[in-house]
Length: 114
Image 1 (cartoon, helix red, strand yellow):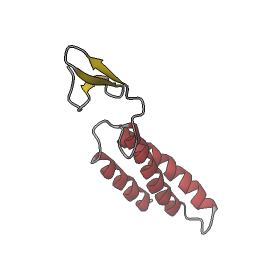
Image 2 (cartoon, one colour):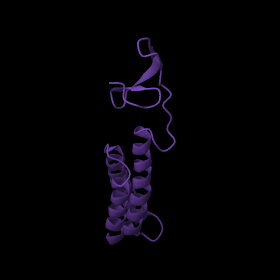
Image 3 (cartoon, helix red, strand yellow):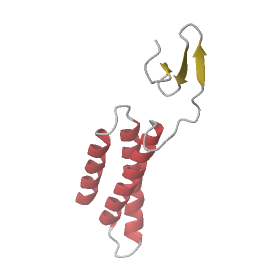
């Protein structure tokens, strides 16, 4: 049980340092909880029967997978924005695009349009 708590705290600290949107933290915590539960069940029924060790391993793997999922939702970790259509502003003579994640418009160089 002590290893599980250490693993969960480690995932939380790493995830909190990465983003401000909350997706990484939320997914890391959920993944760690589900992984710990699954790991405890599997660890208790397989091998030497150590639920604590299984929970710690499951929490670490689940937390990592959840953090990566949250990071990709935020557009990081190798995710690409394939739905980035550009529009032309005739008065400014520049292209801009709409970012659906933030709900804002940006010039093609990344500066806010409004």
